[in-house]
Length: 390
Image 1 (cartoon, one colour):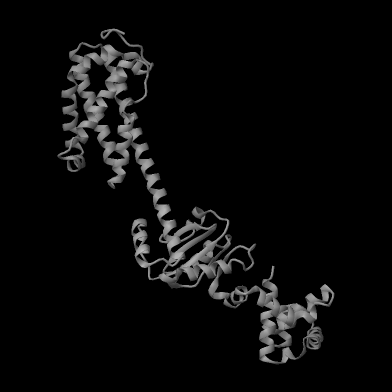
Image 2 (tube, helix red, strand yellow):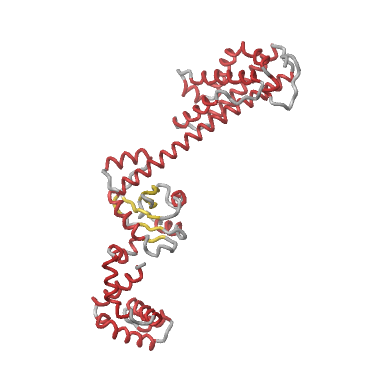
């Protein structure tokens, strides 16, 4: 296409403009770079502060203009040639801890300044108005591509940082669970941006995704999977309302919360939380270790607990299942209500005479255990062990 010819509107600007237009602009590229640099530095003060004494911004503008002229020359709608430069620029902004707001403002200001300079050059070169109009479209399309590459770089760096932080947090949880030395934990906590608390409680969970569980925990909790088990390290678990909030958050998700311990004992809280998950594993809701210590004592040694249940409750095993289950239910209610017949009858929805009859049967089968404190303790533990057995 001739420089002074008319362009066909509605087509890609790169196709419509071509090498002759690029050749008309190229001699003034150094002056154009200088003008754009001055405008951006004045309009976006952070750039002057961040980049003073470096050539980074000038190089970026030079690269942008060079890419623009090459795209004009190609006449084939070629993609942005210096894309990696702008991609890396976005990554660098995140590494420096700066938001993209100022960068995108700088791009907009640069586009406006570049367009003003290009319009003057195009007018001096005698380019027709329609060619100048398409040039404007090309300038802003080019800036949009640069901005998109920078945003992608910024986003990519954020994802990398997030993955690194998640990995560091996982290693921190692992260190806490294996009782690592203080310096190792302190270093990982600093890398993860986690303030070391004095007291923690550890949550154990199973098949749920870590991200799903993390959304239910306080913002300062650590969440990670270690050896196939999910853990949430909850700082300051005794804070007002924290346990109530956890109960509400895990009403439909099965998890167990270990006891509150000093940070150095987080592994013990995690061990007990893992053990507590075995209590009614198919049910939902949060299990608090502090409310199930007797059951957990039994779970510590299932062989011993099973032997106790077999010895104490064995005399009932020879009964038919319906009769056995009725007597076991009566025994549990009788122990719970300390031998008071009326509350037992109300709990079982039977007549008091029925309760007395069943208790007589239990005394005959179980011997003197119902009549002594030691015997009643054995019966209570045996019933719990029987309930806990798979």
